[in-house]
Structures are given as structure tokens and as C-alpha cells.
Length: 194
Length: 111
Image 1 (tube, rainbow over the protein chains, first blue to last red):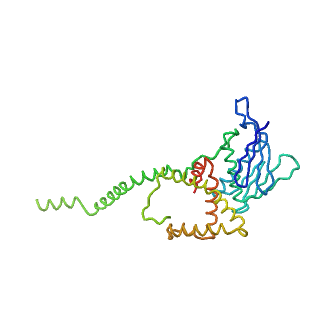
Image 2 (spheres, each protein chain N blue to C red; image 1 turned 60 degrees about the vertical axis):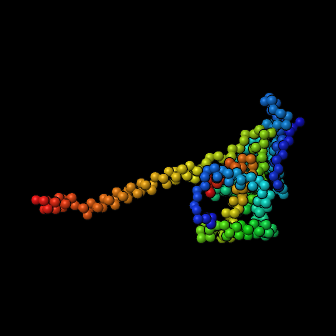
Image 3 (tube, rainbow over the protein chains, first blue to last red; image 1 turned 90 degrees about the vertical axis):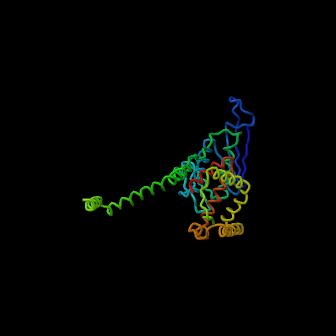
């Protein structure tokens, strides 16, 4: 008897069918060996596939959503799936079949369906009942705007004003060299006290 | 960008707290965020929600933001603010999971 788990988000639902890994002493309701998955988007054709397709499709959606947010060119292409933006509101998904002579499935989804799909994948990733190779959410903090830069700014704010003050004092006082002539003073003293 | 005479830098702990609050609010407001995005997708048939949201957004900016700033002027320009609003709404809608806090933090670093 296979286990079935469903994840829902508004107009999208993701169904995972599989078995627990009894050799690992897993519970009856756990799924570790996925035999089938189905992604249902309302008013769109059903998307289903084998376990080896699930990871790459999830990754494609995650990478595409990241590109979309980070103002980079929203385009993802692979052997299995292509996703590109038609415009700001519509996304074009091309699912390519691994079987020969099968035409690719083309879907157009809006921002609302895209976020529903991402949230379904998030639920699957976070579910303790399904053990799959978890899709990594990018954790790398970019170098250009890390919060560490705040400390550098504070350090500079602390040391820069006195440093500039000292430099300007040196420059200002060095200009007095032109006004004060030490030999003139000696000559004057000699004239007063011969 | 805000109407303020004091230019305070946000502390790391405050940034964290604000991010957590934003994620928690996005979870509750997800149905509304989704409806606004959907309304913009089929604008010809269902423009009421988008127009309401956009109107209130501009109202709040005029009330609380410094109108002399060029960035604020860009936010008020209806021809240009579509992309900013949609990307902000999308960012919020992608961050409603349990790991949403980490996701939002990463997204914010790129802005």
C-alpha cells in the first residue's frame, strides 16, 4: 500500500506518492521512496513525472523566482524545463518530455500561480514526512551589501574626522613657514644687541 | 526616504526583528497579496483590487515619505512604480514558509 501526501496552496496542489524506507526503521506514514508526483494547477494540464524529474523542476522554479526578484534576466533553460518571462505578469513554462516524438507541454502562468507553486514546493521541502534530496534555498549573503559593511562605516566614521583634522592642522601650520624667516630674527637680534 | 529629521542607522537586531514581523504578516496577508497580483494579471477584467491597492499605496507614500526625494518621486510615478510594487509583492509571497525569514533576508540584501 503506497502512501500519498498532498500540499496545497490556493490554486496549486502537489501530490507525492511513495513508500517508507523500512530498512531505515521509518514510520508507516513516511515517504522516502517516491514513485510518482503530480503537480495540479487549476485550469492547466496536469504535470506528473518520476522522482528524478521532481528535483530539477523544483530547482528550476527556485532559480527562476530568484532571478525574477533580483532584477536579473528572468530566464531558465535546461534539458527538462525552460521558464522565461513573457512580461512582468506572465511566465512561459516549457516542459520537455524525455520520450521521443512527444511534443513539449507549454504553460503560461501568472505571478499568483507562480507564487502558489513556489509555496507548494516550500511545503514539500519543509515536510518532515517526505525525505527527498532537499532543494537548497540560497543562503549566501552577497558581499556587496552585507551587514558587515555597517561596521566598516562606523570604524571610518570614528577615525576619519580626527585624522582629517590632524592633516589639515599640519597643512595649515606648514604654510606659516613662508611668513616666518628664522635668519631675519637672528639678524634683528644682532642689530639690537651688537 | 521617510519624513524624518534624524538619520538613524538601523541596528542588526532591529533589521532582524522587522524581517521576522514582515514574514509573519505576509503569512496572514498571503490571500490578499495573491489577489492583488492576480488583479494586475488580468487588468482589463479585474482591475478593482489593483486600483484600490495602488491608490492606498500612493496615499501612504504621500503621507509618510519625503516628497522631495527622487526615489520617492519614482515610486509615485504610475508608469514606473508597477514593476517595483509587483516585485515587492512577489518577494513577500515567496517568503511565507517556515524558512521565509531566511529567504526574505537574502532577497533584501540584493535590493
